[in-house]
Image 1: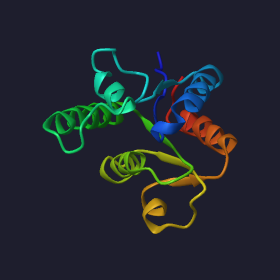
Image 2: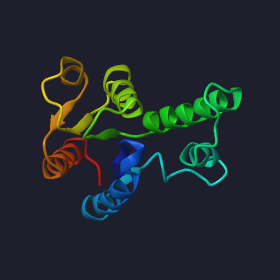
Image 3: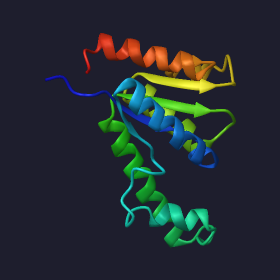
Length: 150
């Protein structure tokens, strides 16, 4: 039995509500599994993100450093466990850019970026750049076929 394609959906924190809806669409339309770093986390582990959301972590504190390390390690593990990374990058986002680099350059995984930033050598070297969600969906369909996923 073939397994479903697993996709890590990278995006800036500020887009998480909009992206959550798109993730649901992708799962239904394409029969894939989506990992969204802002939602696919058990409540206990999400505490660090909740503290960031509420502005409760003091800058440069040991607690902030520890929580940041936990979040980063959890995201890196999730990227390693996925087959493809899709990044939504409508504006610069350090976390999203780091995830693109890790997936595309370090792990050499298919990395698709929906971005309005065109022609940057770093993005061109580590990822495929797309203009629309429709183009990303078509590429996921192609990858699913080529890689023989459900």
